[in-house]
Structure formats: C-alpha cells, structure tokens
Image (cartoon, rainbow, N blue to C red; front, side, top):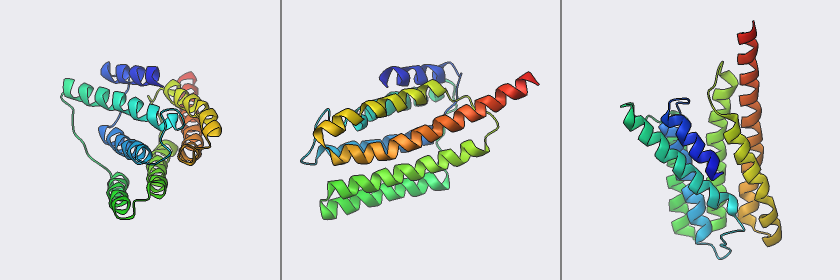
Amino acid sequence: MIVSAVDYARRTWIREINPVPATWILMMTMMSLSFWMYWVSPRKSWTANIGVTAGVLDIAIILIGVIASNIRYGTLKVAFDATQKRCLAGGAGVVVFWAITDQPLVSYSLVQCIALIGYIATIKRLLKAEKTTEPIIFWIAILLAVICAIYPAWVRNDPFSWIYIGRALPSTVLVIYLIARIKKRMNQKTEE
C-alpha cells in the first residue's frame, strides 16, 4: 500500500494524473478519525486493524503529494462539493457524538458509513466518466491490502477491523471495476 501511495504521489508530481485535493482531504479526515477512534478503544492493536493503520499512512503520503504538486504548479485550490461538505459536517457530528457518549465502536461505525457516502459520490462520478487517468494499479494495491487485513482481523476477532473491511472491500472492488470499464471504453475508442 505504501509503495502504491508513493507511486500515486509521483504520478501526481509529474502530472500523469490530476487528483482533486478536496477528495484526499476528506479521505484523510475520515481515515484519521477512524484511526483515532480505534486507538482510544480498549481493543487497540497495531496489527489487528492493520487496514486502518496502513490507510492513514497511505492517504497521508498521497495528500502530501497532491498538495505539493498543486503548490508546485500553482494550481492549489480546495473546493468541496455538496456531498463532501456533508461528509465533513457528518464527521464533525460524529466527533461530538463520540465526546458525549464515549462510544468509540459506534462512532467508528458512523465514520465508516460517512466514508461509504464519500465512496458513493466517487462511484457516481466514475459511472458518468468518459475517461480516467486514475491508476488502476493503485486501487488493486488497496484491494490486496484490504484482503491481507482479513487474517489479522480473524485471528484477533477485532470488530473495528471487520467493520473497516466490510466497508473497504466491496467499495474498492466496485471502484476497480468502474475504472477498468472506463479504461476499456477508452481503448475501444482509440482503436476505432
């Protein structure tokens, strides 16, 4: 996952891809909240919920690369769409809920639901997209990392990890499918 994040940042740096900073800020916010809520729970472990631990590092590398690239090219602007704004507001609401109830598992579950809403917005864009420069190898690496996270979740029987895997696995598979579909259409148009 970390190698794929470095590659993603590299592709951004050389303008092979042009990701939107707001998307990665939202992802970093949700993953950081997930990590924080997990880490203050009594079940915390560096390995049991390795998907979230690796995810925070992965997204941090990408976010730094996206911001640095946009600064380099003088294109840094952050504009959140309506769904992203609602997700950020929902994340803030979950933090308040968590502070009041001291229920990290429930709060963590709510953050994963918000992350799923963010993925749904991405999926909607991919369903309408005619072309994409998104590297499919990056998403395959994420899928492999999520699959690798199943074993520690199983061994430790960690509910936080199972919630993360339950959200990440199907959403990542769907994103890969949609990117592959777009790339196939792009190749067919090129051949015609």
